[in-house]
Image (tube, rainbow, N blue to C red):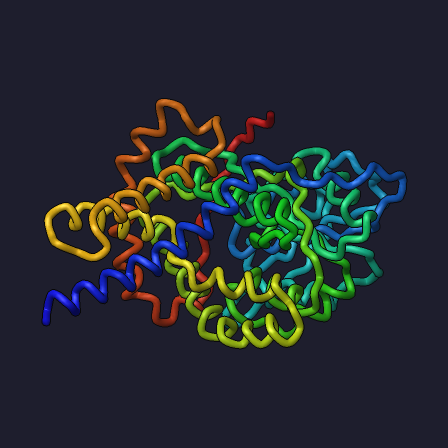
Length: 394
């Protein structure tokens, strides 16, 4: 009897993990063999407002704001606005000298979406599009120009390519590699197969009135995922501009990693509980496959946890008479390894990679333990500390 129960449970687990691996594999292959459509060059320039929400980010915001005003884009067609939430008075004073505009806010419980809502409604002039950056983000000089091409081509929502500006520690290297895997699977691979690109929270642009309307209904700290679902429910296609680069600081130690991933896991759980089952209605009644696909992603096992579970099951299957047989578990594990190898850019295959791989078991354990500490994580904004990092642009 016990053997039968274990056989059924292991078979169900195999099917669940197989679906996860197959999903990642399809988009990994697509991202490897295809290319993202590039919008045509245009002589028309969108009037943009660039928002940089900054909550207690005195250490980095001056550097980011100074870089933001140096775009190769007509100066009269974009405005940089720092949304200053609890910045020091001297920081605000220095910001105004750069010059960028400053909108000061203060909330009992600060969140990024509250700052954006306040700033959008406080603007003194009209804009065609809004660009969202994080306080540590550095735009490549032609970032706005490349976003503009997509906006002028008719896209109402555009995601740029966020890349690491630091890989100085093993955790930062792993975080940078993880983000590029995300870019490959959920942005490049999706775009090539005709799906919308995933949003990432920054380095993104939207038609102004659409953005202003949609963010009014968003209140969680996982605002990028809720905004993405709101866009997809209205069948707004999200474009991915792969060569529009924004440099982003990666986490440098396990403590910061844990706080960040705990918030992300809580956000994923919230998206799953809220949108997964209703997404079937969108799929079958309205044929909204983009919306269903996004909600389906919330049911996927995070990649590090998936790697850990597959490794454990492949090892255990060698010693216990599980069903399916060990050959199937090892085969699925190998397929997932191939998937990850396809999704990792070639520049990461260097001497740092092995040291980073040695950290994966501890990262898996950290992620696994976080599953039991999700309560309240999706309701409270936890700031990720940033430091001024010199960007080495390609």
